[in-house]
Length: 158
Image 1: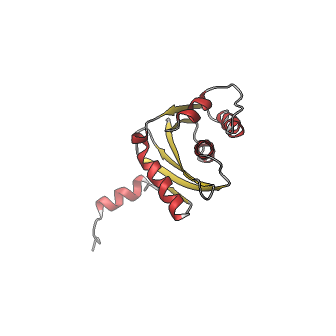
Image 2: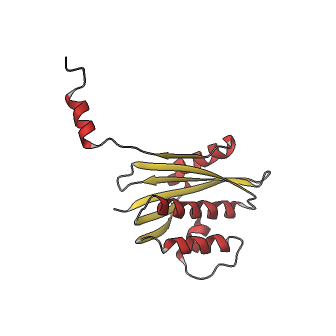
Image 3: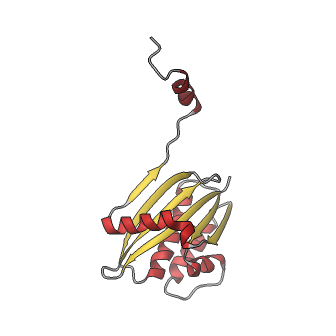
């Protein structure tokens, strides 16, 4: 089963900081997890986006995902992630780390998406940066037996 991790970043030029946001979805589009991470000493929006992409690969590894599609609205970062050529730009070291992380997946692809397709991550990034908060939420699902019991016994059986 191939999961999707969407990433985005918000950048604060005055304070040289950014927020990375990751949204993990299953094949049906159901959100399985979301995470926001704050970064300091960030020099540009490109660095912020590259950090967010790196965080996406790290989250996929932490969650034990074998097959994943990383999606973001930074065409530059996505294009650099799809190549094996050494990048010598300001985000070169981060791209190298992303390439290294890619080897830890059974299958991985990086895909560019339009901002409109990435609105949830974009809004969470802006909000996280504004509030200065980090967040990690994992959707917990009930197992079949718990769901069945609730359906059979909506009220006290007495």
